[in-house]
Image (cartoon, rainbow, N blue to C red; front, side, top):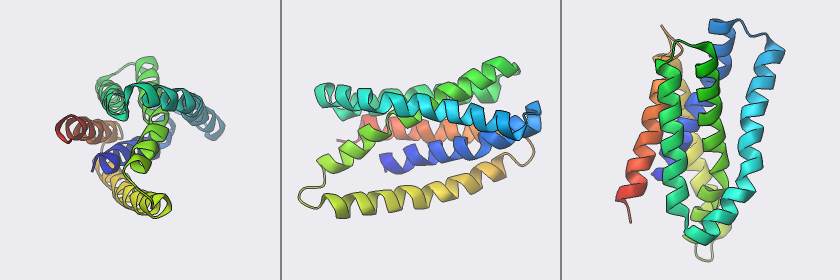
Length: 168
């Protein structure tokens, strides 16, 4: 369930950020692509470091921290009237979520036993299946104001935090 809500938060924010930048701030296609690439790349570059840290301190602290940071940043993006603050908050949210992806993959492998391939296949099928619905829900939430999708993403990440804290 943690993996599903994590991925729902990620998909909600990733699918709506380009639309938001285009519709609300007149970003061109290239500027939108560059902004998204930078946000994603920062998280991707952090993945090996996050994986190494999670090998030392455990998966749960990073899952909680990454989702909490993303939830707070997405909330700030929803709340902010400042373009710069919104862009930075979106960058922080996406970077945090992408950065902990390897940690979540490692957590899935930790619980896989001798069936790593099957377990990962089922895990990612569930994550991406539910995430597809998150993209639709984010579109519905953003129907009148695209920033509302960021509030939804914040909520999904917050649920992942609560689950990570509450579940054994």
